[in-house]
Figure 1 (tube, helix red, strand yellow):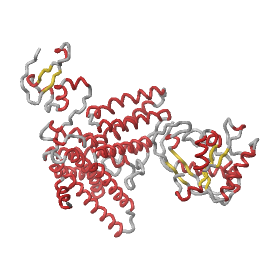
Figure 2 (figure 1 turned 90 degrees about the horizontal axis):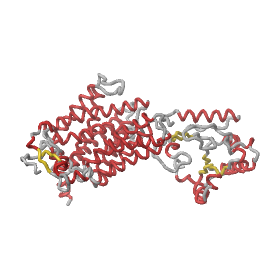
Figure 3 (figure 1 turned 180 degrees about the vertical axis):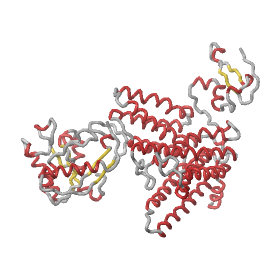
Figure 4 (figure 1 turned 180 degrees about the horizontal axis):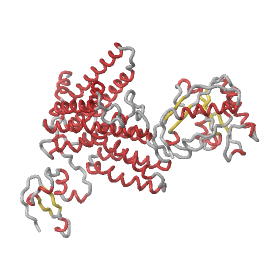
Length: 390
Length: 177
């Protein structure tokens, strides 16, 4: 039984990657502790704290993705909650907005509920549209206009970063597995998170070793050109190496994804640095010993998660074969029009302007009294000239 | 209270407003007496309209305060730990008010007992006075060095205020207006 368990473990690319991560952690921990023994004059406690925190974070992440889909949704919603709470405790807020902040917290619950029930359309638009429109309205109802723009601007930016962006990690697990036959959504999630975090570490290490030219000293004095380039090289290499295991990407798209993740991961890092610099603080919190706050750890992910999510479908060779299916339509009328539904589920790989008129089929709605007034136009995957029935 | 080790929890005696904790509702009164084990302090009628509560010298009905100070004395003699808010009231959330002199009286009576200044931040945002809706915020507790009776009431109160103000600038705290 043990042998069969080991066999399934080795056959599973996600498990193998995680094993590799634990191996890396072990090597790093041993080297950090031996460093602490050899050179006693320098203080290595921060580095040791950082390693301990890495162990805890990696174990929690493993449990979240291995146990159950529900567990993972709860895990990521908790991550969003901790990040949003940290953010709202850092920024200046108004007394009158106390209850409105509770509505913002409620947005976390709803956003992850859409993920849980697989309502893809709602997941995409809930925070950018509904919450975006609701919160200022609620603020207006409480009647305080002094500092209104600041309050709503900072609140919505925080929601986008800590809830909307992070929830994309969670939705990766909900994607249908046929798009990534090897390891499914879990593979993509592990690919994204491992690359983003290793990119952070690589940029830090290369910057420490070779760093000379500061890239944006006004925002983050420790960021160097050498660090960024080292991060890009390591991440792109890893992206290509891990792609055949965890993703359906071929070499060239994997290289693109590696470049994208390393550059945007850097962007996320410095964006949160700018926030901290503006507030005059070094770390966003004290939740993770050796790292700082939760925002310090997920800063890169706030950029890479949504960008990876939307770019992954264009990176597969099958084109739109790995789009998330709309299990629940945004509006009921769209579900009745099967053509529109198909179009939403499988967007055309070519821009609409390049389509010929023969790519379209007209599907009159049967229940309508005026069929031709309610025609839904949809480009079909295999264009077959279908005449308009009038 | 949760900052203290569980084994010493029976030593803790929060000083709390009698009218709110004991006369508001029966359940709260039971909880305050049996679980929290509070030392009640009553606000005197003449000072209802604001001002400090723990000022026996100004008080037209000093018996209540004498009894209160006696309770505190007894508790301190039994090696218990008093938790008190020298502002005498919660006042406006997240704003430091003038300290009352009651704390100075206690310190004068017990010059050997250390007073540990503690600054609390964020609690007034999470659950301000009179609200029942808790909004999650990170709260900070900053604990200072112990201080003792200086021999003089104004200097002691000034020292205490200075210490607390120093604690309030020890970390970054966002504005709350």
